[in-house]
Image 1 (cartoon, rainbow, N blue to C red):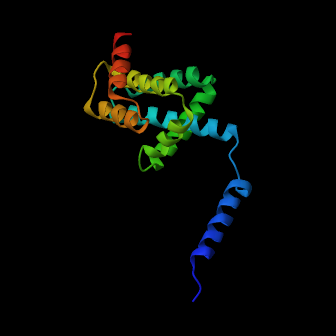
Image 2: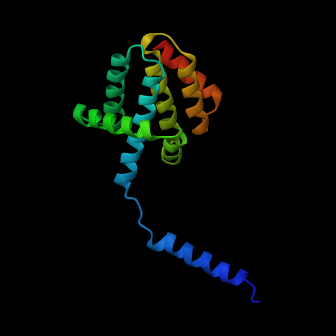
Image 3: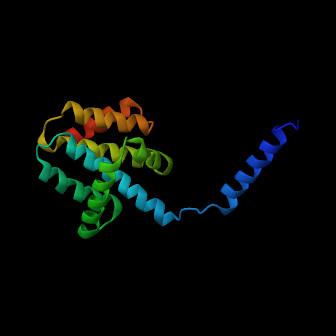
Amino acid sequence: MADPKPFMTMLEKIKHFFEKHIAPTESDGDIDEKLKVASAALFMDMMHTKETCANKKQHLILILLENTFCLTEEQASALIEIAEHKREQATDYFEFTHLICDAFTRDQKIQLIESLWKIAFVDNELGVDEEYLVDKVARLLFIPHIEVLQARNRVRAA
């Protein structure tokens, strides 16, 4: 009987070739749109952790999206609708954070964490679920806890 190892190696080489040279690649525009949706979905999840001040939180999310991604109000509203749908379909935060982790700089990740804190503090109360969400997202983005606390303190002081 022939040794299957050379055959597997050849299959792996063919697979690698197709993935590298023939598989469709995402354009920068597609990645940018996915990053916007991922960020907005995390913002919307923060809004849903505690239903108090939902209108204020949604208005703040609209402003954050407009400022962060240079969007018009209409574009930000459309993004919120898309993000809400994606958020409802998602099974975990990793679906959103892995995109952000790969594409955002450290400063952009910190800015995202600060935005989450801003949404959490709209009602001047920090709930356990809100704190958990920020902590979970920060861990998935590999942001040290001390930097998460510093971001929280900057937002609280502002």
